[in-house]
Image (cartoon, rainbow, N blue to C red; front, side, top):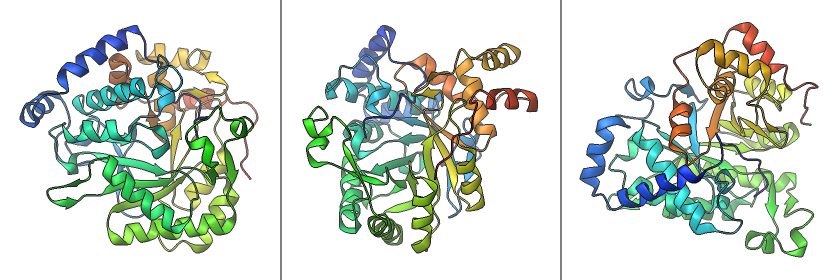
Length: 361
């Protein structure tokens, strides 16, 4: 909740602001005009069909769904030139990021209640001119909030994402429980409140974790959610959930990059058929990894950027990635990850950046 290190290609900059102005000009385009724009260079066909996989490859989920390996995130912390609490700036950046991602052929958008960008994402999707089947939407409910609140959360997300329309209600491709805890009431609205200084969250008990998961399964049964998963759980949390799960935990989203990669978590997820996905794929609380010698050497050898090498390392480990930027140049690099392959030696050298293994218990 508001504490994730920036999982972005790089912070938005002055050049990004000029791009945002371009986005504001493009926003009033008719749906027909937007469709022509996308046909000229962006998304088309079904998500993970042969045509879309020429741009972004997909991973198989245990439940039978397929997920694009690279998602454009919309977390407010990805936009470094927005002042704290400036939600208008954040929404503008998120809107541009989604518009641009769809235009260049991206098909996967990652959001959450707590990002405060869902309405902007919904508007971008609504005016994009593409059909619902051409985009994969991930969103998240704010913690282990229990059965009824999780059902309501899905309803709220569907509304914010403009999934109620002339054909009734559409669906969320992947719904995650954002964290194994709950947010203190005051901290939802004011992160500077005294009670939020030490921590804005309260750990959830086993019963709350399990009740929340039952609601996730119910939403899938109803049909408004296609796949379900978790985020930032430790292995004990995952085991508690698996005790009552009758549907697969399709995906687990965690901090993962060359400086922080929990091999025990990856092994656990593989053994249980859970797809691991990285937030902060370029570095987190320890800082960016882009200047690491092993990464710089591989980038030079392949004629690509350090960011592309870093993201490619995750994909070759079988870990999907969430990027986040409103910079058009960075966005283009984030999607061009499938024209090269790192060698075994390069993979080992990059994995060794972490040092001692991090363990979730």
